[in-house]
Image (cartoon, rainbow, N blue to C red):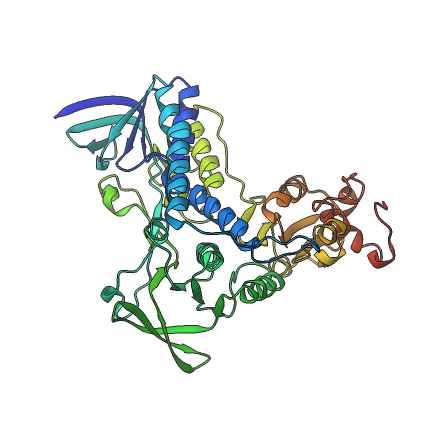
Length: 469
């Protein structure tokens, strides 16, 4: 058995792992990276990249059936589902190669080991026939889909995000269990491509953590497109009948039976930590298997750090990369240490219209004891939205009533995921309503909606002409 020595061992090959390895490389560290699967992690291979491609393709196809402009007729589009999946696979392969495999080859001090890394003790990891000792370790093994236990689930071949991306043909009907980001994005993809979609959500509304106005409005828009959304659902059993999935549920204490060709489980994520033999390194995890770290990304074992999905929410690629970079810096730096600030992390759901938010919600601010002042603006009040014939959505700004500091911004609109970055800067740098109002915006743009919403705190915007300060 080979015994090797490195300055740092990084277990994982996704965003957090790469960020950690590249940061350690800046310190001149000799790094061993261990990955048993495809480089790039969830986001590139079975997450952000392929789903956003399919969402855009589905949007273009759907728009050929819904004319918005007088005098413009766009019908007759045809769908070749296998060709669509083929192009999706090509894009994923290119991104994985160019952004991960090629990048790794450019760094002489980073060696890749293929296989499952397991701790032998707190200073040694084994992968295949190699035992690797190191001064520091960073665990960045990510997460995987978690299917909540439901009686009869074992009788059906259900889909997760992985299988849903690689179907050979478009299902005629689909049941989705889960009404958060993954469930909603897949619901709109399949529905717009022609599948009959029924979405089941256990709580009283979809996206239960976001502002209730946004949840209600988005549910209405998706329902208008033909997606059946059921909330307050208690799933009683799942069965396979004649090749179809049959689910028995209680909806508001009323029994109902739902049948579909396929079932997609979008019920959360679990940490990829069970196979690491963390107990041999004495690394502590919570009751769900997520690794416990402090604000410096350090575990309870001084020289072992962790970052990305394996430490829990928020499970976002950008957050994972930031955590990984901090872990890499802190593992290598002797004196100065960095901490992770989650106060201004933007999040998005890429439905159409999309949802994006940053900072605190109305309820969170009120719970903290701070006097809160909020305004909600319909996209009907945004000139650009009217011009492009797409006024679906709203913007809500949550501000400190006394200081007028912007504490949170929540958007449901076309391209909300693009608009949120100005709001992120506002929250990060503790800007006020006047700071937004005093900033000149281009007219007409959707991003102008942030300024108009800020102005609504101060004046009646129905009596305001365009571009007024």
